[in-house]
Amino acid sequence: MSKKIFSVALLKIGDNPFKLNTFSSIKNSEVDNLEINNKIQHNKIIKKEIISSRFITIYFEEGGTTPRPEVVYNRKTQNDENNPRSVDQIERDLQTFVLIDTFTQKIFISDFRKKKTLEDWLSKKTKKTVLIKNIIDKESFLNEIQGINTIYLSAVPNLFSSMGILGDELTSDYHNYGVGIKHIGVKISFEENNLPDILRNRVLDFFRQVENNSINKLAVSGRYDEKFERIFNAEGIIDKIEIEIRPLISGLLKDREVFDILIEKIK
Image 1 (cartoon, rainbow, N blue to C red):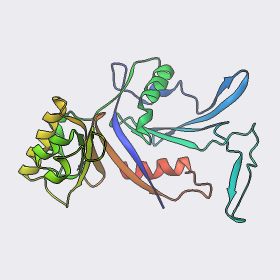
Image 2: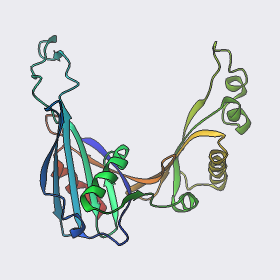
Image 3: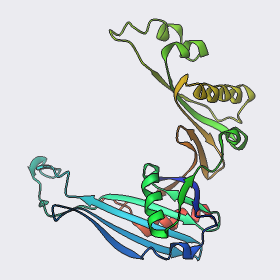
Image 4: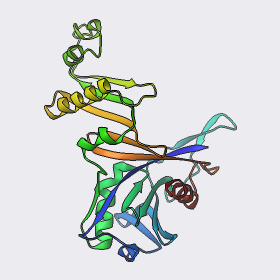
């Protein structure tokens, strides 16, 4: 089985709550090619489907002519050999899954790094302003999670010693590496907890350190409920939901199966 993690955020389209017909301009199936010098360099297929008169699924499968290594490794012969794929063939091996819930006005995205691209694409299709927004604000974060899983932070070395996170031997003489250290990153994992006051106060202190630029990066992962994990980081606060699915022999995932499993977990 393979795990697939979706980021969850609020979807705002125009000034009013969106409905199924908001997405009527998106075709059930379309092909988008990128041409350079009259030659197709990138191929993308897009599929849309409505499920249970509530969900809109949008599936992107894409790939380009490059990179195409000249040599591939044959695991059967355990030798290198010439790549059998010609320069005119494109492998669509990049998959992006998007689920939109008209009941909760939420969007589920398999790759949150494509948030801006998806906003622009949906805006172009619906001819309305599209925003993918955080579900809650920072002030509500600690009030809604049930416990802290991990904290990751990056800061200047002397800040770690002043906060008591690292021992003096790791932070007091940080020029002993032959070059100065700009930042130190630490990941702290916690046992199962109900967010004791001392931990809550420490996280609040980290939030303040971010605001005055003392901490370079901060990510706090908390247990929200049995379905969702809530994440605070520089991009804001988003929920995460994880599904398990068996990949195809190719290593890719069957799009309808992904959406069916995700919908079943959401309901």
